[in-house]
Length: 252
Ligand SMILES: Nc1ncnc2c1ncn2[C@@H]1O[C@H](COP(=O)(O)OP(=O)(O)OP(=O)(O)O)[C@@H](O)[C@H]1O
Image (cartoon, rainbow, N blue to C red; front, side, top):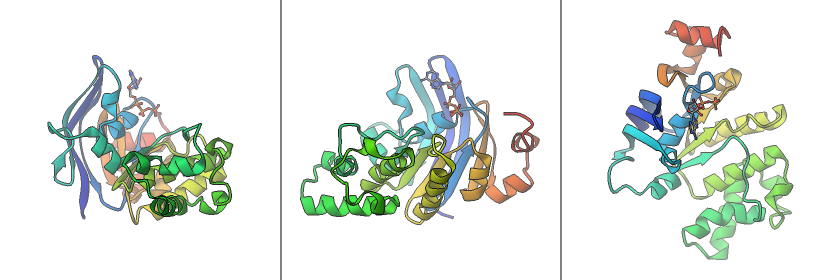
């Protein structure tokens, strides 16, 4: 299987507190990889290290390697801004740019990259909104504020915004945890559809969600990766007793 992203002995700190204790993981292309584990085990920190978002917080440190195809994203001379445009991110709480229209939210990244031609922007905005399965709901109000949308629509708008700059990988940090069950199911359908075009890494608290959508699942505990397996295998007969305890609700 093609490996898009690989971490080697990845360690991360906030100040003196070590959060990740040496994670080795291989993430397959055009697949969904879920990260599960109890609160505080380092799931968000891990995904934020993949696209160099961890370092935007003062006092943080990373050791080890993240290989994106044949490039170590932590090598000297690598531009973190370029990495973040190729490895996009969607956060837990929908965060449309509040002063911008729906259209401008999606076009913003392209405009930052210097694209000005209206026909190109129009096409990219429509394509991204379609990919995020929200085009039909917003096509008649593209000039309205994104803040007027429901939570689930806002999250799909944020996914469209992330997709507009055509990332190769999309990191999703609990993208549905602030949403109701119907919006959650829209997001899950969307993620399943998107994996044809983008490699997806998704952090989730929701074990059923991981079981429903992920091809592979990683179980984290106290900053270590206890198990990484095919999702079906992990949820039916996990190799490690700690995974078994977690997925059967004995802790966490
Ligand atoms: N900005 C920060 N400054 C200091 N410590 C932090 C910061 N963000 C997270 N931490 C600490 O790092 C540890 C791991 O946090 P992280 O958010 O990666 O865990 P998580 O598994 O994603 O948790 P959750 O499921 O609750 O979101 C926790 O102990 C948390 O308190």
